[in-house]
Amino acid sequence: MEESITGLITSFGFSSPEAFIALLVMVLAVIGAVVVVITFRPLMEYYPYTYPNSRVRAKIGKLFNEKQITELAEAESLDEVTNYLRGTRDYAPFVDKYPIEQALDANLAESYDLLAKIAPKTLKPTFNLMLKQWDIKNIKSVLIAKEAKLNEEETRELLVPYGELKDDHDKLIEADSIQDIIVALEGTPYAKILEESLPDYNENKTLLTLESALDNYYYEKVLVASSSQEDDNTRMLHSYIGTKVDIENIKIIMRAKADGLSYEQINPYVINNGYRLREWKLKEFMESEDMNSLLSSIESSEYGSVVADHIPEYNQTKSISVFDEALDAYERDTAKNIFKKKPFGIGPIVGFMYKKEDEIKNLKIIARSKRGPVVPSSEIKEMLL
Image (cartoon, rainbow, N blue to C red; front, side):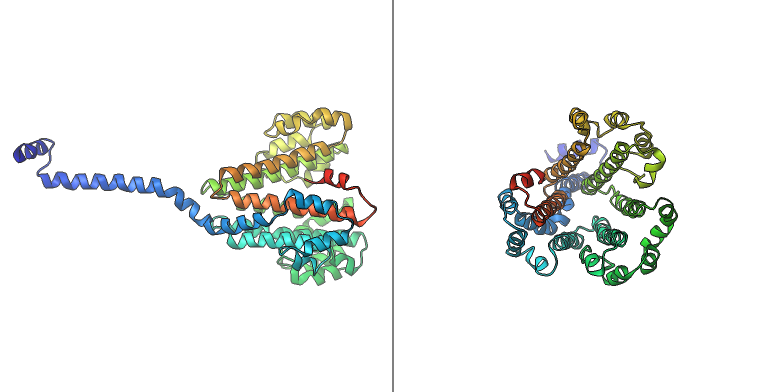
C-alpha cells in the first residue's frame, strides 16, 4: 500500500513523499491566508470606526425627537425655549453663556470639533478642514456687520465663539473697514482671498463678491481633502460633501436666473470644481437664457429627477423655494442612504452630521419665531425640517 502511494506521488513528478507533503502544506497555507484576508478584511476596514461610532451613536441618541421639537414650537416665549434648552446637558453650557443663536452655533461647532478629534485617520484631513467653516462664517458676519454699521456688541453676538481665529475676534470687530479686516487677517489665507476679490467688490459694491470668494475657497479645499479613494467609507464621505457643493451651486444659479442675471454676472459666485456637475455643465446652466431654459438643462443632469416633479408647482407659484426644499430633501436622503449602507463605517458619522445640522436649523427657526410678533405654532411647525 505504502509503495503504491509512493509510486503515485512520484508519477506526478515529485522526488519523494516529503516534497509532495511540503507543497501540500504550502498550498493549504496560501488558501488559509486568503480565507483569513477575506474574512477579516471587512473587520479591519470597520475597526477604526468602532470608537468614533460608539461616541457618535450616543450623541445621536441625545438629539431631540419629534415630540420635543413640537413642544418647543408650542412654547409661549423665547424664555421658555431657552429654559428648555438649559435643562439639557448638551445645550446648557452654551445657553448660560451666549445669546440663543450664538449658543446654537457654538454647540454645532463643538459637535464638528468632536468629529475632527475622533475621526479615523483617513478622514481627519477632511474634518480638520471642515472646522474652517466657523472662521469663514465669522469673517462673513464681520463684513455684514460693518456694512450694516452695527456696534461692537451687536457684532460680537453674530460671531461663533470658535475657530482658529477665536483669539483674533477683537481685532476683527474693531476693524473700521474691509481693508482693516484684511490687515487683521494677515498671515491667514483669508487675507489673500479678500485682497484678490477687493477690486471686484470696489466695482460692484456687493458683499456677495467677498462672501463667495471665501465660500469657494472652503468648498474647494474640502472637496479635494475628501477625494481620497482609499475605501468605500472615504468615497461615500466625498459623495456627501460633493452633493452639498453641487446643490449649493444649483441654488445660486437658480436665484441668479430668477433675477435675470447673465453668465458673466453669475460665474464669480459659483464653485467651479463641482462633484457630479463638472465645469462645462455649470457653464451650460449659467448660460441658460431664462429659468425655463435652466430647468431643462438641470433635467438632463444627474439632478434632473430632483427638480422635475416640482416644475408644475413652480410654474404656478413662480417661487424657487419649491426647488430649495426639494434639493435640501435630496441632500438629507443622500445622508440617510449612507447611514443605512455603512452602519459600521462612515454611516453614523454622516448621519449625525445631517441630523445635528437639522436640529440646529429647527431650533433657530423656533427661536426666531418667538422673538418678534407672535407666530402661531401651526405656522412654525410648517417651517420645520
